Image (cartoon, rainbow, N blue to C red; front, side, top):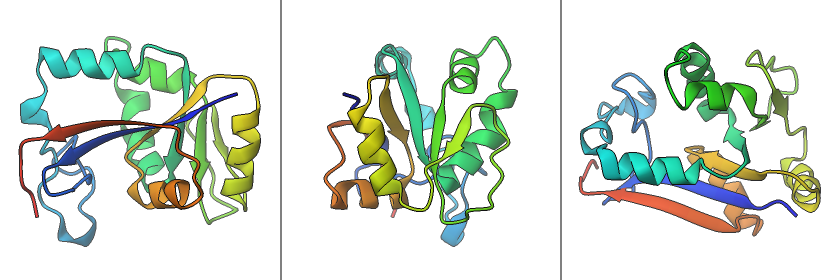
Length: 159
């Protein structure tokens, strides 16, 4: 059986939006993009490395997929995460059935993502790891689909 594991970077006041880069996700006038970067040190790198050390596929909401697909395929072979994310399967929750997923190994969950995830969880295979995807996480929690939480809480207030 596969597990759904939530990986999240969160501020003290509960913000998960745009931790990686200054222009990552300005939705809603959010102008603190890249807020987590100053806190990434060797210890944080080890924690992220540990999260990615077991086999996994990505489980992403459509907005996070768009952000990741615009960055990770172009990160280069020297980046430890880009090539990893490039080769694994990315399962994407989207309400748009005609959305073209151009990033290799990307698959839509279909019109009923909850049913699709129930089926995926019952199969043998790598665990399903979320990153970001705050809107989609609500669906996962509401339907009792989350098996583990890996939360990194940063000492910053953004809201």
